[in-house]
Amino acid sequence: ETGVTQTPRHLVMGMTNKKSLKCEQHLGHNAMYWYKQSAKKPLELMFVYSLEERVENNSVPSRFSPECPNSSHLFLHLHTLQPEDSALYLCASSQQGRSGYTFGSGTRLTVV
Amino acid sequence: AQTVTQSQPEMSVQEAETVTLSCTYDTSENNYYLFWYKQPPSRQMILVIRQEAYKQQNATENRFSVNFQKAAKSFSLKISDSQLGDTAMYFCALWDSNYQLIWGAGTKLIIKP
Image 1 (cartoon, rainbow over the protein chains, first blue to last red):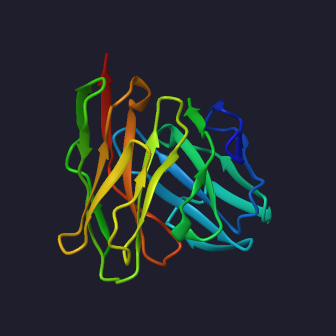
Image 2 (spheres, each protein chain N blue to C red):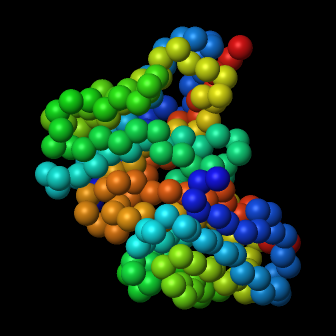
């Protein structure tokens, strides 16, 4: 148990589907992050929430929509995805970035 | 712009040997932090070790230690008495007061029995 829980662990969806990824942390952290990890590519930061406000959005396509209803929960809503969006999506949290991030186990997403 | 470079895409060593993973970085900040993360096949990204730039002493966590050369902007990870469970991707990362970590591309480490 790492303190950051991601569900589902695996997800297969069609290009016309709508689904959501969920991330939950019980560490009392005040910042949460979504990362995309594709094969043979560096980790890509997608979104950052600090104190429930989005402070970073790295030019992510609008088919990815984040939501942070409170400091413990983070969602990534997905709709009309493309096959190239297939990847491991990692959620992380931190109290102060300089202390390091705590990661969840990720959601392996496959778009068919 | 900040950058982190890991020049070794893959390494393999025999169990019980010592292995060193390389990392170089670039930043204009004076106060920053460096990290090594491990990602085993289970996908869990785990913090291995952390170094504060203003501390000259190299960080150590059990079998893991770093060689932090601030002037050279080098931050290598040494794993002593390597074990099969050390097989993983290892990522070097830099944090310098922005909201995000800057990541290296990773080194795949294989420990052979």
